[in-house]
Picture 1 (tube, rainbow, N blue to C red):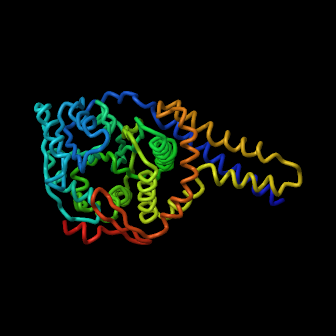
Picture 2 (cartoon, rainbow, N blue to C red; picture 1 turned 90 degrees about the vertical axis):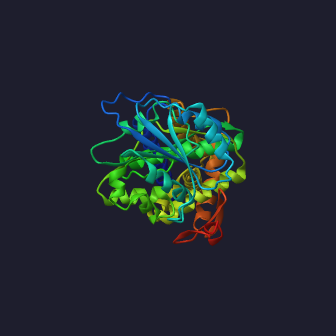
Length: 385
């Protein structure tokens, strides 16, 4: 077998894997905005929402939390710093919706190196109900938010989650973040679930509180630097599975800069590398660059005269047209910038992957965190606040 043929087959294998993943996502995911099914059982639910600072859509995401269609639920907002500017916004929302059971808890419990988890501890302990949702404050909850989570439960479920679905971008780099979140990261999350390898996502996590309390409570999620990684491992250890909602919940983005995209994606990549290195390592093969490089190398070593431009065009079409079809079919963010954003995403991807293998510190909402090659920690400066 010639070198050219080997390279061509490798390129085709990557393109085929990309197509299969899109096919799985097509079948597994519902169209964005699809209503949750009607449920016979609608138990009371506590929503624990850690908040830190004012974001682009904070007033909107706060408002949505008070408009959920569920017979009995409570909201528990958790803020670590008494001087946080989000506190007045939360209190105003609570006053406008006084009929909804809601509490604001302020303080920080240092149970782990994860500042978000530390912020959630007081809310978890104060929750009145057996079913508890840990929900990031920037999730744009639909009215049937709880119903979607409850509907995803199965007999072997240990945890129900939702990936973030990027929406309402303002500018090109926000479109790039949508390209990362939606047709790449969300897609592969659902592929993992379909293969029985569901991974938790910290944006929205539905827990059965007695189950987690029997394993050490919310502090048990501090076993890893990322609470979703710890949740994944805990659920698997119990012989259960992580399941995903059929229609992911939106995270409105607003304006983004390149530096923000790089910082966020590099942080998440380092966390994945530290917590699940065997699954993270093949991520270098995602995107268009690996199959494109292999296809062009095959053309260069071919004994026949092959047009490089035609090869490149064929690879671009084979990789991006199915992804665009998935985005269109599922009613995700789609604009004239979507294709350029996907190309920018795939250009940044290898550099982010390489960066993930290097140690480094970063600021996570006022908390300095260090992610090393094997372990991660919250810096002493942050811990002393």
